[in-house]
Structure formats: structure tokens, C-alpha cells
Image 1 (cartoon, rainbow, N blue to C red):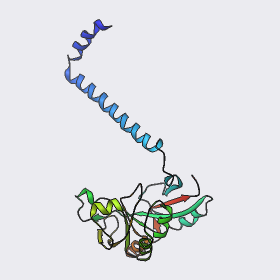
Image 2 (image 1 turned 90 degrees about the vertical axis):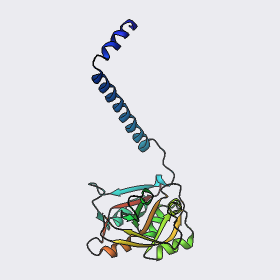
Image 3 (image 1 turned 120 degrees about the vertical axis):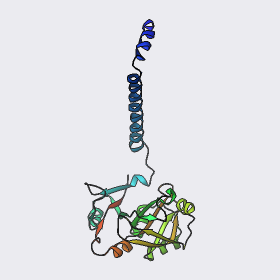
Length: 214
């Protein structure tokens, strides 16, 4: 078999373009396969944390961009095994400068009392919880995000709307610690609904559901 190796190598380079393209195509295919296997492993073979194992996400079957009626919350809560339901609305928007990657972080409109139950692993001082729940323009951010943006309790945050045609004027009233998903800004859904008016009221993008057991 080895005696044919020089013959194979010699003929492989008779058409160098064809050989190069063949090697490149095989390399790209193997690279793509590796990426897909890594994604599959991340989704299906990593163990959820105890808190994550109790949560489910409900969204419109068509797309994340298609909202659902907010009253679905009450229907979902009636399902056996459901402990709590938290509306969850992606806001988007621009903080300071879109070109600076450190200014890109998740912003969600939520019902403060509900999100603190559904994401029970978040550690927040009681006085900060109370301020976040009671003040309409209050927001809560993760500690790593606060450190990165040099934000402190009482600081003001201006977010210019893009998906939604409103601007947010928020005040940092709570800073939370959490093992995961700790670079998120939460603000009051009621504040967003009031700013948008009747045309958007009563709709939501996602529900976070807290189950009784995994």
C-alpha cells in the first residue's frame, strides 16, 4: 500500500487549485460539525442549576417578536404545578453609545415583585427590594454590570428606545448578586406601559414560569 503513496502525492499536486479547495472544504465541514456539536452539548448535556431547573419560558409559538396577551398569565398560573408567573418584556434601546460594547446589556420590563420570586436566587437587600417595587422609575441591575458601568445606588440611567418609541429615565434603586444572568437591567413594566399608552398595554413578549418541582 505504501508503495503507491509517492504516486498519490505526485498526482495530488498536479492540480494544486483543486487539491487546495478540497482540503479547505473538508476543513470547513469539520469545523462546522465541531461548532454544532458544541452547541448541542451546551443545550442538552449541561446540568441546570437548582434554580434554573424550576423555571420554564413561555412565548408565542410564531416568534419572540410576536407578543401574547398579558391575561395569559392568569391562565398559566392555574396550571397544576405552577407556583408563580412573571411577565418578561425585552426592551432593547441604546445606553450612551451603541458603538461601545460595554454599553450593550439586556434590559427587561418586569413586574418587580414577581421577578424577585421567579428568580429567587438573586440576593438583594430588603430596603433595595422595597425601593425597586415601590418606585415607578426604579431599576435593578446586577453587581457585575454595575461595576463595569461604574453605577451606584441613586444614579440615573437614560435609555433611548429603538424597538419601542419611548425613552426611559431610570434610577438605580437595587443591585443584585446572582450566580448566573447577573448583567441584566430590570425596570417596571407598568412604567413602560404607561409611556406607550393604550396601543401596547395588555401585551407581553415572554412569561417566566416558576414550577413547584423540577
